[in-house]
Length: 224
Image (cartoon, rainbow, N blue to C red; front, side, top):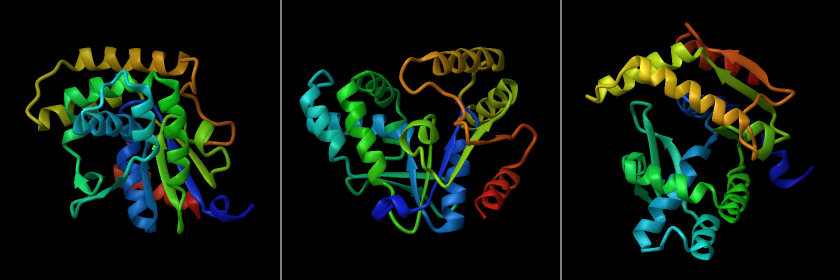
């Protein structure tokens, strides 16, 4: 192996609400490595399309945007998620309902998925990369140095999501969140393209009842 293939990668996959984004950011920060939030890329493509007036059914233009997406991921001083698109802070913009709807539209376009696959591979830069998503270890970085499948019970994940939304002033039923998470788990695991599952050589970490600090410490210990 040579070039990028020699750069170490920690792939952190898991279902919705497992905390993989937070853990990936903390691990990347601790190691001084680059960070890839693969799930945000589709939202960034949708945002870039909106910024440039590109229609979401213009596949050729969307592929060009995806292939040349200028995205960067990191944390602010408090350790919170921070995302830049073309050098501008896009953290809040990609979490809107509009960006989410746009992401759903572009994510079903195979040429866009193909373009983003290569873009994700290009995030592999020295000194190392921490990549989080749902198919990082099984599809994008099959040769990752460490593969972690981070999970937690559906009940635990619903409680975490419920707290996040309450902290933002959004009132939602815990029972409804639990049902939504279970349904998304089913869809993700049964999808025909890159279904959600642990890689054969992944280390499964059930974070139920664990603090963020304990999960980060475990991943860093596994990383050696």
